[in-house]
Structures are given as C-alpha cells and as structure tokens.
Length: 280
Image (cartoon, rainbow, N blue to C red; front, side, top):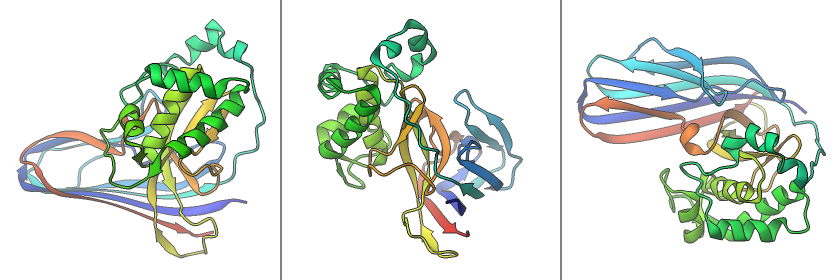
C-alpha cells in the first residue's frame, strides 16, 4: 500500500556574532527511485540566496549555496511531498563464490573497504567469520543485523556524529547511525558489499491521515547479495513505506544532511526539526 508523506526538515544556526561568508551543501532532497515518487520538493535558505542543485558521486541530489552577506543566523528548510511504496520482495541470493569474483569486487570496491566511519580491523573480521559460517550471503546480512541489535543498546546522546563503528561497539550503545556503521563493518569484513542509506522514518506504522508527528532523520543499509537487499539494523523492521530515502554513500560522511565552512564566530546554538505528516 502506498503512503503519501509531507516532510519538513528545518535546520537553524545562531552565531555569537556576524558571519561574513559561508559555503554550504545540503542533502535533504528525497531520492527518485522505484519505491518512491517525489511529487514536490524545495529548499529555502535564509538569508535568501540562490540554491544550485547537482548530483554527487554517490547519486545523491545536493543543494549547494553560498552566503556572502553578514548574518547572525542561518536557516535551511527543506519541504517535500513524497509517495512511497513497499519494495517488491526480492529473494535473490548469490553465493560466496560470486562475491569473491574479481569483477564483482572491483565493481563494489568502495563498499567493501574501510571508510572514515567504518574501520575494518581484526575484531570485526573475527565476528564476521563466525556469523557467516554456514550461512548464505543473504542470511548473513540478516544475522549481522540481529547481532548488532543484541550488541548495542539504543541510547540517544550516548554517541555523536564523530563516533565510528569501533568506538560505538566498544561503548555498547548508540543511535541508528552507530548501528549501521557497526553492521557495515561486519558485512564488509565478511566480503559483502554494503552501503549506508539515510533519509526519514515515520515513527508510527499505523499513522492516521493528516496528523503531524515529530519525525526523525534515520539510517539503514543496503547490502548487495545478487541485488540490493535493504535492512534496518536498528529496529529489524522491513524498509518500506515509512522510510523515505534521501542519500546513499560509504558511511555518514557521504550523506550528512548539512555541512559547510564559514568565516565568523562560533555558533551559539543549533536546532534541527523534522515534521512528518501522512496525507494519504
């Protein structure tokens, strides 16, 4: 069954004084693929400046903008109307021999090797070998997801955006970003290409029409087991109508919703607000 979701994602910064110039990239535009249709989307910036759009290396739409006038506040608001459907069940399951093929490993090189948030060291390799033993690649993806949920407790504030997979696992706590990074490390260590996916999640599976809720940015992953297998290691739930995809990449560094550089004093405060309404 299709869902139609209205999403408002507003990020604001207040600075201790006037910022003279800033250069920014926002990744807040829902992707267009077989499971979702973007009916409307716009990104507004205050102070008002032109916004340029381009597709990055990973296939994500980026809204880029520069602010060259003094300002003590920056507001970026993305508003979208998206129709989502559940992905058609895919039972494709390749074998380990295919994943070891040189051409396959070359094609998915960037999703098989370490990345800024996903170190692959001996502890991850040991666990990955143990989980994969006696399982097919597709079964291994599901087993890794279950292992991560058993090993990490969900705790907001326990980590921050700089926490990598190793640190999160040692801490034993984290949020969706950490769950995905740990799962990516294990899957890549097992030889399964895996990438980070981010977007939005409506928190209520039985959402009523026209009721606005506080939503959240969310992360899940996609693993290649003959085709791209989508899985949410934080909840274990299917990635379906409640998920709205925005960006893909090797890890969080490739998909951060807003990043940039500026010339001016430190930020006094920042605020991120995501509001989601199911409209049909």
